[in-house]
Each structure stands twice: as structure tokens, then as C-alpha cells.
Length: 199
Image 1 (tube, rainbow, N blue to C red):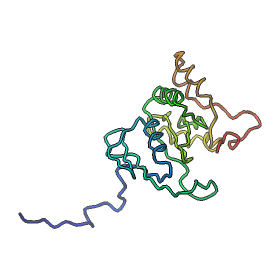
Image 2 (image 1 turned 90 degrees about the vertical axis):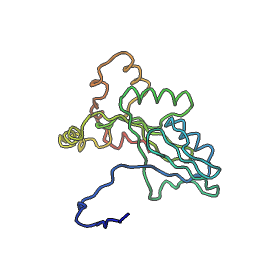
Image 3 (image 1 turned 180 degrees about the vertical axis):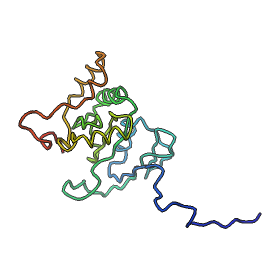
Image 4 (image 1 turned 180 degrees about the horizontal axis):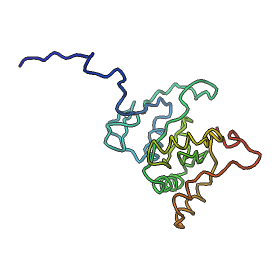
């Protein structure tokens, strides 16, 4: 069999981009607790694991979350540089709300629920205080998100509006129109975007 020479020049565009975001890997001194938390939150299962690491998946990717046991690690320092959070999207608002209710029964509750405008978002902390966002995309296309940004609404309020997830569940179950559920209210009088932030 004759090998065919390849090139890495002319056959490829200069603006190559990744095809997807594959996975996130976490170092933790709380291996068992972290593994259990991520499995519950994402409804994930191990693709491979041993006593030192676990590769977990919930879809057709071989692993979405990697967890590595490093027993001697210290706690996260909140005033240091690092990744702010990682986010996972649900296809429907109902799926996000059902996940919220399922996790609440497990004692896993968000510390911040906010209607950003483009997303309905719930933020959680894993056992090591890593922030995890579960979200629903309000706009079905990138063009509609761009139109929201171009309208000036995001400039006016780049944070969003805090919401009560139990109240949103009740409104959803009552049959309220989806477009009414996801529309972002105006900031309360006398408040600015940072008043909506919960670190």
C-alpha cells in the first residue's frame, strides 16, 4: 500500500475553528462527593473510572466531565484569576425547570437564578465551589440573540433580572405562554445591573 502525501497548508482555511467544546476537567480533593454531585446534576454516568479519575458522559461524547482526585489540594481562592463558570444548555424551558425540581429534592439548589435576556439561567456550586450554570436559550437562533444585543437592552442591563424558580415553575405549570415566561422585566426603579448580581 502506497502512502499519499498530505499537506497542512493550502488545503486548510487560515481561520480554522474547533468543531465543538468537548469536555471540562476538574481537580478535587473531594473525589467521591464531586463524582456523585456531577452525576446527579447532569444525569451523567461514568464512561471510565478508577480510584483516581472518572470520565463522565450524558450524551454521545465519550466524556463531558473529567474528575481527577488530588487529595492535597487547598480550597478555591475567590480573589484569584480563573474560570468563572461552566454552562450547560437544555433544549426547553420545561427541561430546565424539571431539572431544577429534581435537584432541589436532592438538596442541590441554585444560589442565583437570573433572566439574562438571552438565557434563563440557574447557577449552582459543586462541592469545591466551582460555579455551574444550567440554562435555557430564550432565542432559537444566533441572529435573534444578536438582535437583542443590538437593540441596546443588554447595554442597559448587562446582568439580568433575578427570578424565583419555584414561582417560574408554578407559572409554567399553569400554562402561561412561553413568551411571557421568558421575557426579561425592566430593572426595578433605583436599581442597577450589579444589584442583580449574586457572586
